[in-house]
Amino acid sequence: MWIRLRLDIGWRDLCFGFCSSLLPGGRQVAHEKLEDLWSRSDKDALACLSVRSGFDLLLSALDLPTGSEVLFSAVTIPDMPLIARAHELIPVPVDLSGSDFQLDVTALRKAVTSKSKVLIVSHLFGARPEMQEILEVTREHGLYVVEDCAQAWCQPEWRGSKQADASLFSFGPIKTVTALGGALCRVSDPAILDRMRNRQAQEPVQPGKKLIFNICKFACLKVISTKPFFDIITALARRWGKSVDDVLGGLTRGFADENLLAQLRQQPSTGTLRLLRHRLQTYNARRIHQRIQHAQRIITWLGLEQSQPELLDPRHSFWLFPLLNNQPERLIANLEQQGFDSTQRGRLAVVPPPADRPELNCPHATHLLNLTVFLPCYPELTDAAVDAMCGLIIQLAQEETVYN
Image (cartoon, rainbow, N blue to C red; front, side, top):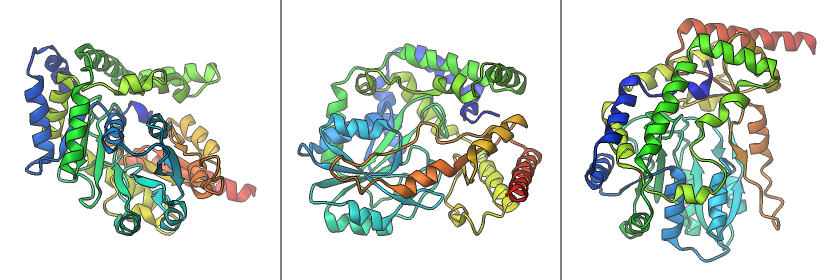
């Protein structure tokens, strides 16, 4: 039950993507049809290779003065501040609160300076935090607001907050409604959107064989994720003194660390554009509803209504289920022994403060990330499996109480 292998794509979709990659021509038409589907009548969409690619294009279009500050929700993937630095900008973290890792407005006010130009708000694990207070602060200081919604997509009609300046959505390998790549950006300012589009038009198109390779790779991973193969891999990992994440984690990475910017600065292939449009048009929302039902079952079983009230937000779609636990490594090890996959942090990290502002070291975000265990709640789980997992967690908590 390894989370990273629970790919939200079926065999028919993989076959569609494979065939789409082999069909010649039609790239411009595929691009326009996808953006029209996403933007409807607003004409505010840009299809690109990844959220990181869209962010890179956006910073190019904004053309901020060297040394300007880009404020980030403190927990994100390290590539995002790396891209800001590549544009000679200064990443500045803003501390978080709550098990939904929501931006702390008090910390935001503390972080803003006259050099602050952009705020990146990350919606993590399927949560959709309230934006109103954040937007009030950004209006006071004239900040350009970007929503990183890579983990938050859950319904076709939701394209981020209309009051944000830009919203970025990922459909990479382990995301909801994955097309094994591709992203969609909503950008409210037509001039900025045009500059992003013109910049992207100068980049090379990712070879179609890349999607074919990914389809073959993830078809193999879907087979590996079945119980017989997964049990073998788990046993081998233990023999080698490693975790399943150690053995298989890198296989779901969209980009290698080397030459990252060159990998990001490509246009999506025709096959990727066609597959993403197909997935958005045919996606079965039942999968998300089942995921939410599993999450609600976990909340009830573990009595989290008081300790993690943020999880009760009806907009939360639970891309992952974040559970706060005082002994996360022990919990993960015990769950794995019983065949339940869980993990911690993945590639997420706390953005370090600038050297001249060490007071912005984000202790709350660090504490939250260190205590959070991500439980499986994907649709393939049965109610009985969820109940068994929760029973084990309760048993471990009782043993810990007795021991202490």
